[in-house]
Length: 323
Ligand code: B12
Ligand code: SF4
Ligand code: SF4
Image (cartoon, rainbow, N blue to C red):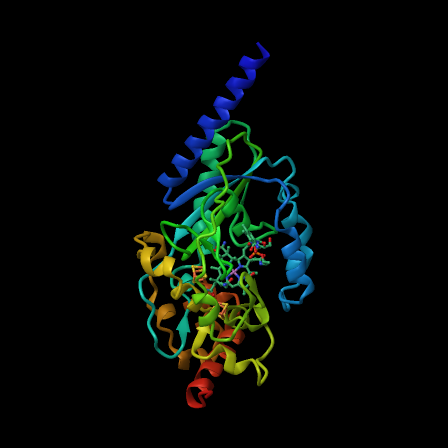
C-alpha cells in the first residue's frame, strides 16, 4: 500500500515536470529543464574566484556567495529550479566603431523575460495547485549557469558560458524556483570543449587567468557595464572599439559558428539605435534625451554618464589605436 502511494507520487512529479516543460516551450522559451537545489558542487571555485579579487567592484557577488553555494537557501521550501534558455542571436555582428554586444540589441531582456517567467510561474501553479514560485533573471543570488548545467541544458565552456549543444551560447538564462514536486532532469555531464582554446586566445584583453577563470577586471563587459568610475590610462585602451559589452569569446566559439541561428522572437527585435549607436549623441550626454531613447534598454545600467565615458573611450581608441 505504502509502495503504491510512493509510486503514484513519483509518477505525478514526473507528469508534472513534463507538463511544466511543455508549457515553458509553448510560452516561447527555447529550452527548459529542471534542476535540483543541492549544494553547489563548484562552491570552492566560486570562493577562489572571489578571493583572487576577480569580481572587481561587483561587491554584491561577495554578499551573495553563501546562497549561490547553497541555492536551496534562496527561497524557503524551494525544491527545484525550472531553468529556461532564450536564444538572442541576431546574426553576424557589425564591425563599425562603437560595437555593442548582441544581448543588448533589443528591449531590456530583464523586462521581456521577467514577464515570460511570470507566465511560466503561473503555469507551474496551475499544474501543481498551491505551489509557491519565485522568478529570477540575472538578479538575486541565483547561480544561473550552474543550475542550467544541472538541468541538462548544456555545459560550462572554457569561456565560462553555458553552451547548449543545439544552439550555442547566445542565450539568456531565466529561472523559476518552486516548492512544487517536479522531477529533475539529469545534469549535462559532458565537457564538449575538448582541446579547443579559441575563446582564450581570442580575448582582446587576455582576461582569462586560466580556462574557465575570468578576471572580470580585465573583461570589456565589466569595464563598459559594471565599472562605475572613469577609465584610467590602463583601462581605456582595453575596451578598444566596444561601446557596451563584448562578444569576442562567443563569436569565435565553434559551437556558435556551427549552431547559433538568428532568433525570430517578436519581443527581441533589433533596435537600430542600440545596435548601431550614435556616438556623438551619447557624448552629448543629455539626460532627458538619453532616458527617452534608452530608458527601457540595457544602456540604462551604466546610465548616461557611463555611456558617455564609453563613447569617449571608443573615439579616443579610434584616433589613437594601440600597436
Ligand atoms: C557577474 C556576471 C558577469 C560579470 C562576471 C562574468 C563571469 N564570467 O563570472 C561580467 C560583467 C564580466 C559578465 C559578463 C558577461 N555576462 Co554576465 N553575469 C554575471 C552574473 C550576474 C553572475 C555570474 C557569477 O556569479 N560569476 C562568478 C562566477 C565564478 O560564477 P559563475 O559564472 O556562475 O561560474 C560558476 C561555474 O563556472 C562553476 N564552475 C566552475 N568550474 C566548473 C566546471 C564545471 C564542469 C561546471 C559544471 C561548473 C563549473 O563554478 C562557478 C561558481 O559557482 C550572471 C547571472 C547570475 N545570476 O548567475 C550573468 C550571466 C552569467 N551573464 C551573462 C552574459 C550574457 C554575459 C556576457 C555574454 C554579456 C556580454 N556580451 O557582454 C558576458 C560574458 C563574459 C564571460 N565570458 O563570462 C548570462 C550568461 C548566459 C549563458 N548562456 O551563459 C548570465 C547567466 C545572465 C543571464 N541571466 O542570462 N557577467
Ligand atoms: S567578453 Fe570580451 S573581454 Fe570579456 S572575456 Fe570575453 S572576449 Fe574577453
Ligand atoms: S571556443 Fe572552444 S574552448 Fe572556448 S568555449 Fe567554445 S568550444 Fe570551449
